[in-house]
Image (cartoon, rainbow, N blue to C red; front, side, top):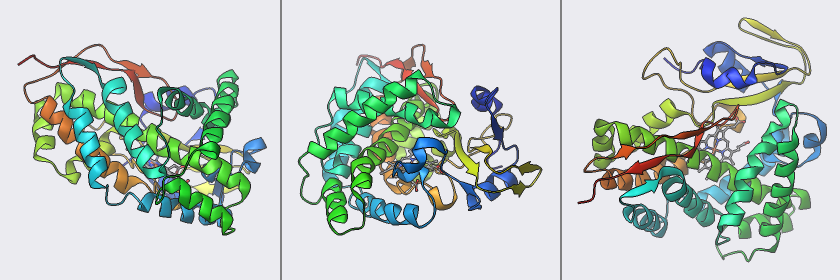
Length: 339
Ligand code: HEM
């Protein structure tokens, strides 16, 4: 069984003027159909944001972004060691978001962009930029706060010293070579940082919480293997839906979409089918170009956490983070026995 609709995940879309696709065939067709664009319309249309663009403009920026990501493929030894050290130091009472997922995702984002350190204030701003995606859901006060946060993130990268051989250096060289516009150079480091950081943070924290209740999963992760991590990613699917807008009338299996209509494409597992997997990294021209990094990062981090959980782990009450598109946690306390 592949992806379908988790009604709990799409509940927040109720009352929105958005068509939620209901079948696997419709989802696959939607993600492959160029008539369903990624541009929500309005001011975002002109923003130079990779996530909101289509066609040759999107392909051009995406090619540069793929080169940035390739700079940390395979995941460098020093990044692996930094993750193992940070996770290996955890014991007793700690929080799977603050003390595990956030530092790991931040280490990888820093390494990819070759700029930093990404301090607590920067990470708060980066996390707040998520609400900019709420442009799909009709905009809100939260989105206005997110614009200020996104501006601070952009300013950070404009001023940052670029580490030689890092992603920021590559992006600046791409602008100098005419491969990116000035606007794209202003936005792309933040978009890339957010894409890498937000999904990984959500995935790692939720995976850690699952491990705290499943000794078999801890054992499987201690043994290692990208396959276990891939399966977990498909079950957790930190991005629950992606959004598209019809550039012209589109007919999908079971549903006709009018020109201009917004469409939610669920990626998550089917709630009624235990063990079913979703399409965690999406499909089609916007499919995640960082999936290899995400799996490598999680393999190292979850194996190190499995070592920390070797004598058991007791989860406290988790705080889930309600968002129509992202599945994640705000807090997830956990305690390991003192040995
Ligand atoms: C578990 C972790 C991750 C998950 C589940 C995930 C999932 C996704 C999904 C579903 C999309 C498609 C969005 C759409 O179709 O509109 C996407 C896009 C993207 N992801 Fe990831 N991602 C993860 C980690 C990463 C990492 C580590 C990087 C960078 C190293 C990254 C970079 C990107 C970029 C740049 C895009 C935009 C691609 C485009 O619009 O063409 N992601 N991701």
